[in-house]
Length: 138
Image 1 (cartoon, rainbow, N blue to C red):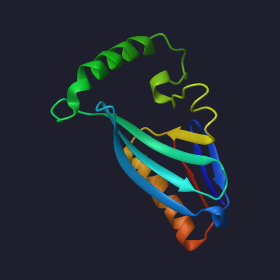
Image 2 (image 1 turned 135 degrees about the horizontal axis):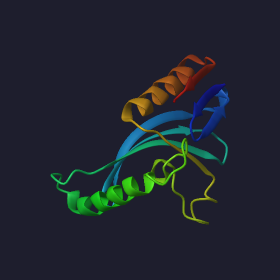
Image 3 (image 1 turned 45 degrees about the horizontal axis):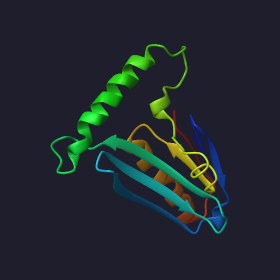
Image 4 (image 1 turned 180 degrees about the vertical axis):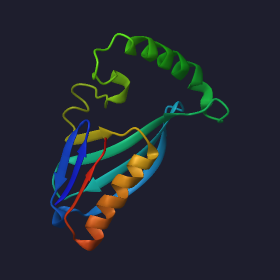
């Protein structure tokens, strides 16, 4: 088994069911860069782990930076109203009902690219070596 414990939940998969482990980056509407790790299995449930970051205004596709700045400003204001220990909403996976909630996809958002790389290294090693592996992110 490969087991991953994250603040957003736990994912476990039988190593013999892993078909591939991959990472890639893409832009969303020119305002956010997503670095994503996927584990493919023969089942009908897809799992994605991702890190999301704004595209900087100096980038050729940074036209939406003012929107991101405004959202971050509003998010920081809202964080002052959270109960102690409550996770800010922008740190959670966002899904649109029913489109993404019924798409047979489990998604986990991580805080840093380094965390995503650690997840990939762990899953890829378990897959290549056929070795039980567990990773826990804070």
